Image (cartoon, rainbow, N blue to C red; front, side):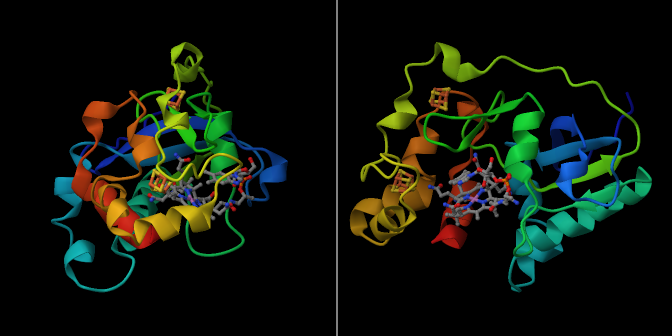
Length: 207
Ligand code: B12
Ligand code: SF4
Ligand code: SF4
């Protein structure tokens, strides 16, 4: 197996999976390496970047393209992104295929290290076949506090996005906005990795 040499990029490998013809990408063989923030070091590093400080829109997506395009060029691979508008690439499905993320009881992905704060900044395609070594799903031995932590029960049936957003716009929703989704925060996996400022940045973008 090769190494993408991610040192100093602010990113880590969140898992990798074989590419499949049904993925609809150019290449039909090789491996997709999913990249995510190297928390908790990521946030203080990101806030020093030109993209965070230039006042233009979508700073994290622009930063992701700059860094991940460079990693792909170095690896003689190709870069793919979860953002950029429809049609979205199937990152959720790819995450499941890595064996390091699963559908949690509330539907969001849970990762073996990042827990419910799993998120992906991009994926790199490399031509080699990297073996997949699955981890053990943490939910198998958990009493699932994620299921009851949402104050408006937004996960009673699927994910009620409008109930969630309405709550975020009330004074009672301040804690979700400033510290991140209470349901995601209830997950014990990766609890030491999370910085409230990073969660607040994403919640503001979501709202
Ligand atoms: C559209 C979208 C949303 C929509 C969901 C609308 C809906 N009900 O479907 C909205 C805007 C509501 C949303 C919200 C959030 N999202 Co979102 N979203 C996406 C996005 C861009 C596209 C999904 C898609 O359509 N894919 C296309 C299909 C073809 O791909 P697929 O993998 O085969 O699709 C599977 C999933 O869509 C899944 N699925 C179906 N319905 C839902 C609903 C939810 C909520 C989830 C998680 C999955 C899911 O089933 C499909 C088949 O397996 C993905 C990125 C991506 N490219 O996939 C992120 C993504 C799923 N979201 C993500 C995140 C981080 C969030 C937020 C937490 C943002 C935030 N605050 O940081 C919020 C949730 C708010 C909260 N309470 O914290 C992460 C995953 C997080 C996780 N742990 O599961 C992703 C992967 C983006 C990333 N860069 O990492 N999101
Ligand atoms: S709180 Fe427990 S059940 Fe819920 S996603 Fe985290 S590990 Fe899984
Ligand atoms: S952000 Fe708050 S209201 Fe929205 S789903 Fe999470 S816990 Fe519920």
